[in-house]
Image: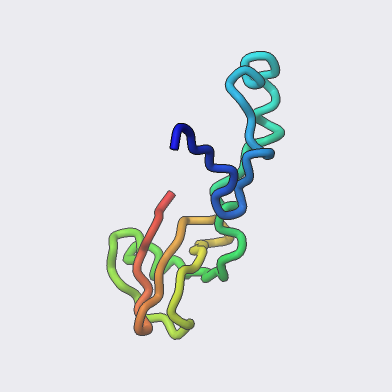
Length: 97
């Protein structure tokens, strides 16, 4: 094999990408093409954590949660915090922004 080109990773396709040359020639293209971190995880279910639990969550303390096992988007006061994982009724942090 001489060359390998990845054309898709998850929802991201090569035809949606931009080149460095395009950025140099049209700096405003970044504003049109940039994807928020929250959008990357938009297909995940979400959990809203109240203020009393968010500090523990951010510090790595596992929190009891009755949702099904899996990965969730985590919010506090409507603000995206990152992702968390529930396993055996315990929510732990995963990716924190």
